[in-house]
Length: 510
Image: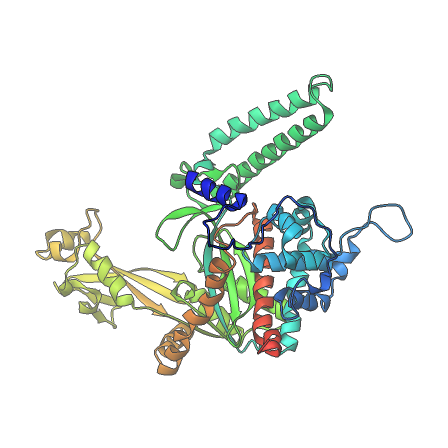
């Protein structure tokens, strides 16, 4: 630091060795004040994507947004920001991995792209934040409008759709999860704080501070009340043994602990994304609290029809969605379901191993006596019909041996490890014709070739959203607001695909 200071002093003093000419250097003066005109239109080049976003949004029907504006011409009141501008700002911000309203407000002061959008006007972050979450129905319609434009450009066919789910972390810590009793204690305290704030006079605290504190306490109280309601919802789905362990977050009560791709667990939401195979356009997006994906396929297909007006002819999913109910439902609707059936052999082998059943006493070694409707085990004992259990797509028949026979059987240690007073039982699973047909088709080579494309298409938007848009954790809280954030991200993603496929090629060579 001292050497640099000496060099600067020598340079400024103008002292140089004899015979050497002094170099002429332009000095940077950062303390000066400048006043120069700015041509806003030239802040960004004609091929800049912010121009594409503005052009795209200008062709959308934004009547729902305009209909919610209260200030009108000819009457008193402050003019509102144009919804087209606010939509374009959020789409551009999400496409650049920015989801903070405060950061966007700062960028409007110096970033050329944001300055071009706003005409070098500054937008308060409250305006941006409120706009993002206050127009739920209009935002859903906006997503549909975007799909309409893309469909008109020939980017969507609905011939084949790849569907997948991804877990995105909630804006809540695992340490915020509490049991019902503790939440009730917090709620009681919050109610007392509300009463105390209402009793405080303006002499004790300024009106502005009082209102801010009242709002904060009331919001906390509302979240605690929501936490208790969420506990009741979970209780309704769980049995008595599990209820003692029920916990919910007091900051984001609707979040659930879910397994992440890295093997860990965190408060999250399950985001379901349906992607058209032709150009990787998202045609459906929804958010749920479900920890697994098996129950999310039917709602996803119905959401696609709601968005595009038609159901997909084919839908490709991973093994998590291949359930009897989904297979039969898609068959009824005329949709060809393609997915990984998996091997039941390894699962069965694991069950046999856990129960101490050797290969000589597995199901395929039992002989069926059709005349008497009974099975005979390898040890010669009889298993009589006990009952049947009917489920969607299948009927399971249970046959059981006498406990007296099993108790004295010399093969007992090889046949069963059960310590109950019941004999060995076997289940015969008889699937419906539609299930058997589905499993046969999934073994065909052409179907396997289609399924191999699933990862490249279905997981593409997931990777794009998490890597390019940096949405690995939501910034909003609550199921409805998280769904809105997912819609904003999906709209930004779809418009980026339009820019890539339709808009950028016209500027090749620029």
